[in-house]
Length: 223
Image (cartoon, rainbow, N blue to C red; front, side):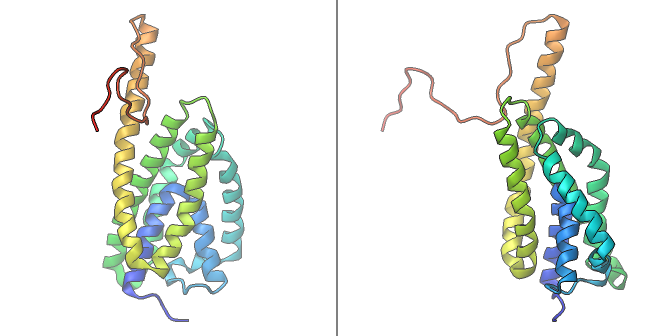
């Protein structure tokens, strides 16, 4: 089994960092399984993930998170608790791609991996919090299923097609920044509305975080 080349290692480090901010336990489970089953040669810094005890623990947490992440309100609490877990774990997993044999690259990977994990986590947490302001649960479940799918697809692309992953990864980072700004602006407006209500001031309402623009009544565009 051939070892991973440098483009694959770089893509894998980025994928591990980013995906840890979305589904940390699924990342640990899939990476460990890939090494345990011989699908890919895990770098020395990640071989511990293939240990049966680690696989069992991560598998159990994947089961718990799968359901916790699909219950409105509970998913935001889960995200809040994991703020202190996903980001350093993303940094550690990214650094593990290079290990002690490449200390400088491992340090750079840790810094970038932690940043990617923080970006992904912030986008996930703020977007899901904005979605949870809607009374229907279907959007929440749909967003969770998209995340469940994006993580294994991203990890597979990083190893199988690192250049394709790199292009998509840049697009995902741009989208994540946009989602953070959009969702955070909405949440600030919502908190401001709550403060106005409790202070007895008039409440003009709040604009939904995500909506399609419509022309005002009576306004028709010329073709």
